[in-house]
Image 1 (spheres, one colour):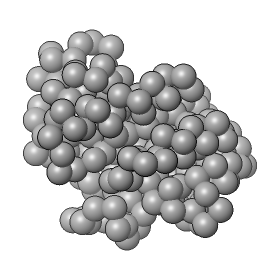
Image 2: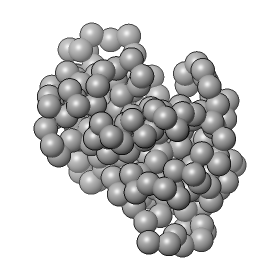
Image 3: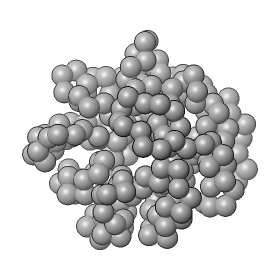
Length: 214
């Protein structure tokens, strides 16, 4: 997960059954997507693994990184490309030891510069800041200011992800502020014209952004 322009990082909805594999395929076919995070709560690991397996295969077919939220054991079980850890989900060093050197490890840093620097020191592959906007996907504990992305981008090479309530209507400001990735859930899956239309719209926003200095 490295980039010289902003890219899309999809977060799954809670319900990934039914026709969701077809919806995911449509989204990944519509435009460039860097990663897909499997974020489903309240299931046994066996149930989660059964749901994750076909989605991981779809991501592999489209060269999209498959990231598991919170659960190192599940990530290892399904052969995920990475794991995303929150503040209570363990040490990234332990995740690295369990999953291997090539696994992508992301860390939620909320609105904290200190947590982000600690994550970098601990070997994270990316840091995530947010929420930047109200969201119904999860309970928001803190909000982050876009200036945080600009600060991080100016000092560190480690990629940063913006997350929380991001839609095609508010994405441009976060791209301009310096986000390497936009993590989006409802802004894609609940888009009135469908997920494929949303992915295309995000691609247009990324393409219209000024080129970055390397």
